[in-house]
Structures are given as structure tokens and as C-alpha cells.
Amino acid sequence: MRLFVAIPVPPEQRAELARLQNGVPGARWVEPHNFHLTLRFIGEVDNGIARDIDDQLGRIHDIGFELAIKGVNYFADGARLSALYAAVESNPALEQLQRRVESAVARAGIAAERRRFNPHITLARFSGRQEAGHHLAQFMASHSLLRPEPFAVEHFALYSSVTRPDGPIYRVEAEYPLQVFEE
Image (cartoon, rainbow, N blue to C red; front, top):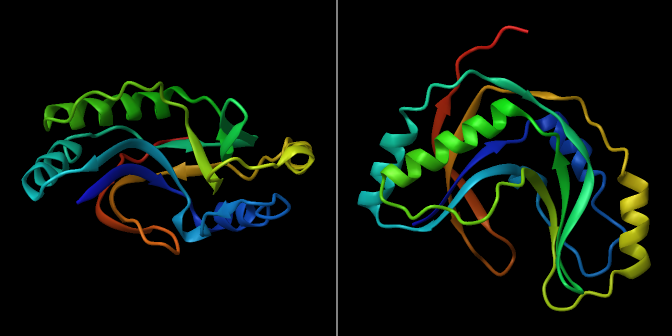
């Protein structure tokens, strides 16, 4: 079972992000129903470890918070473009939730994540050497001021993922509610 922990993106923000998905040759656009903010990628685990992860995640009782999307950016390895994403504004409550998820996964026996948490919502992926050039620059300039309405994060979820040639299939395995927050 291939797992990850994420915050789902609500329909209104999904629709706004979906409108950005064009104009960059070679982009494999993420299906809008698959938009999410990954808190922790776990990878392949057996059913016993999956149950332990579920149990540990169920012990998180953070307070909900608002999440704001702020512009777009991309990941690249040198000249190789790997992904376009919607950036997420820095948020202490989000960072705390991510740390608690990381601790819960570690208590279930999964090695610590070495990469720094960089909250984002992937819009497109690329394979091989993409010659996005001016198309990428135009995309970045056109969407740098992206600011959809912030949304309330009221839960997070454990997802399973099956990779297929036509794109991954994500399934919610469990949801974990957050406590209601007062504005």
C-alpha cells in the first residue's frame, strides 16, 4: 500500500486552480479532484504499518486553521523542470500540524523525512527535459498574483495512491478531524 498524508483542497479553490492549467508545453496537468497539500509522503507499507500509522494520526487533536494560496512557483533540478505548483502562505498552525504528522508517522516506525517541508499544491508534473522556456516565464508572470479565497482546514486525511499510465488514483483511507477554531 502506497500512502501519504494530506490536506484536501475544497471545490471552490480546486476550480480556481484548474483554470490555470494550460499554456505550458509538456505539462502533465494534475486532475483537479486530486489537488491536495501533502503533509507527509510515506510510500509503500504493509497493512500492519498502515494500521499503526492510522492509529497514530488519530491521536492528533490540533485546532483547525485557515490556509491561503499565494502565487505559483516550480521545482527544477538544474535545467530540468519537474513540477509547477500553487504556493501556500507560511502558517504556524500548518507547520505545527505537519510536525505532529511527522512525529506520528515516526512513532509508527517510518524513518524521518529528510527534505524540508515546502507546502504547495502540485498543478503539473514534467518528465525528462522540458523546454518550457518562455512558456514557463509567461505562466509565472500571468499567475504570480494568484490569491484564491483562503479556506478553512477542518481535517486532514490518509490517502492511498495507485500509479497508472493515465495518472495516479488517490483514495482517502481515513480522515482526521481538527478541532473547530474561532475566528
